[in-house]
Image (cartoon, rainbow, N blue to C red; front, side, top):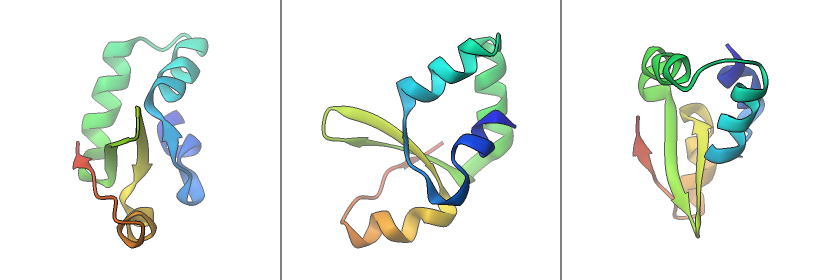
Amino acid sequence: MLILERLADGKCMPSAELEEAVGERGISSRTMRTAKIRIGNRLVTEKDGMTWVCYLLKCKQEHVKRGKVGRVL
């Protein structure tokens, strides 16, 4: 899955950037929503300043250390 590839190894990515990458591959926003649902609670989206960012739960510990805990999708 593209989302898992982009967020591998603890990467944190702005949500808009992730959606743009998906769109560039010709994947619809509906398909992206379905993929997010299948990933489940491993995918976290949180507000970081003015930007929404996504990361996988396995790297949550780093965000907790910085005092950032987001909404789990």
